[in-house]
Length: 166
Image 1 (cartoon, rainbow, N blue to C red):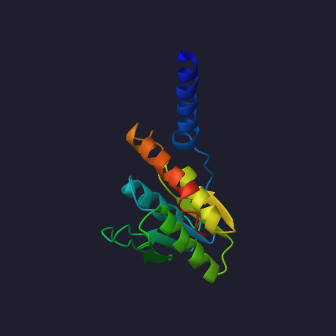
Image 2 (cartoon, rainbow, N blue to C red; image 1 turned 90 degrees about the vertical axis):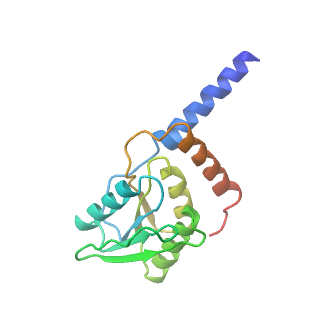
Image 3 (spheres, rainbow, N blue to C red; image 1 turned 135 degrees about the horizontal axis):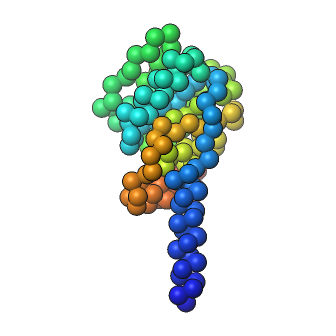
């Protein structure tokens, strides 16, 4: 019994590390658009998304304003499309980006999530968008354990079981 519990705890911690602390990420590369998600570490995400756009990785920046309090940035020589996702969660941001990409016939999107959100963001965007998805997280600090990891477990479960659209 104790050994089984220890194995389960070790498996949970290992899965948490792989999915949320050290998730699969990509190197920045040229894409049709950059998608800046809203949420924790907003300043870091916005800064990285703007920096990547300024460096010429994309000519379009899709900028999620969350529920509206985040001001729309201005980036020289880059078209910035600010939006409020419906629903106001990562799934809504992925749906907006995928629909916008389909309308503009894009083949690739670079998404800028927090580190802990990277796995779920990739899953949701790939579910909605048939093109290349490049994930470059803004936060390279460890997530606020255990709260952010628990939140992401719940978000991932919801993405797999409930938010099945696209």
